[in-house]
Image (cartoon, rainbow, N blue to C red; front, side, top):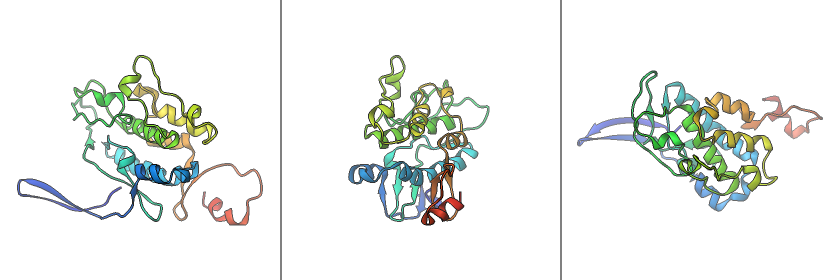
Amino acid sequence: LVEVFRFWEANGTGYMAMRYYRGVTLRETLRSSRQQITEQWLCETLDPILLALKELHNERCFHRDIAPDNILVLPNGKSVLMDFGAARRIISGMTQALTTVLKPGYAPIEQYYDDGSMPQGAWTDIYAIGGLLYHVMTGKVPVQAISRMMSDPLKPVSEIAVGEFSERLSSVVMKCMAVLPENRYQSIEELRSALGWVTTPVVSTVIHKPITKPVPENDFQATMLM
């Protein structure tokens, strides 16, 4: 998560002092270095973002504006989730209207309703994660959710990026982007379990796979930490 040092009120408004990050957005990475985007790279870059969202969701706070231009990739490869202007804390058991915040292609159907008739929650951010992955994997911004209600024109990832990513990852992305909230993953834990991504404390984020053959010496450390 982006680090905020302090916040204060003055001159009739509010201010925040935040850490300055040098890096490029995920959107810029897509434009300039698309060839580096592999399944392993996605895992290493985006799993820390999922863990950050998990912490937010544990506090009943939801980002609601996840997109490639709100994720910063630093020179050391680490990623930071930015721009919490649309984030809202949702009090359990209360029906409340939420500010309409839309980023076409990444916003789920419930964000088109501002009257509280469609609850927002972890599944809202999960749709956006699916939209982000879809864009990164296919090079195409997803069809808007509102256009998918009657007849869904969204093509599966596996049909566009043939052979580039595993069937597992492609299927997970499409479930994240289910039009109806109840058909998506309902928590970050459930999503990470489906992805099979594991974060190690020392090396990096790795995709956990069963070992079926001897491990080369230079791969031993990463395997040992899984």
